[in-house]
Length: 120
Image (cartoon, rainbow, N blue to C red; front, top):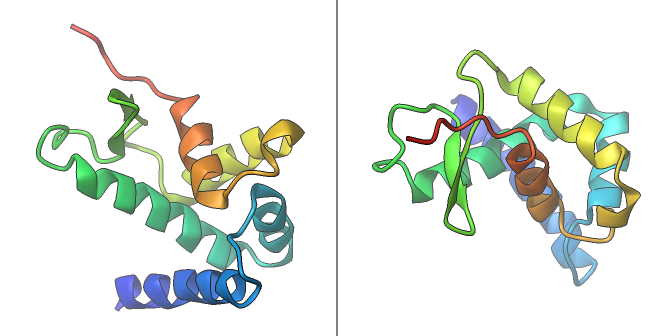
């Protein structure tokens, strides 16, 4: 049920973007997050889960792990959706040069800057 609600929220973001003939920018994402935090968290978690799905087998022991340009991104396992969202918003708000890019790219970028993967 939770996944269905998240998917519907994310599709709401996507429908708005498609109606405008484009994509949701980081700037718009940040504005919408100021207005309503719940869909914002669902969007962040959707991006994380989408990225995670690509590398589920390889990085299975890390709950929030994925690859960006072939490099692993690992986040603290004790973080929840609220922590992840707060980190994303904090990083994106402090970097206006990324506001023109897609919100999905922005979320991945923000989380990659917080990676704590152990290298062996």
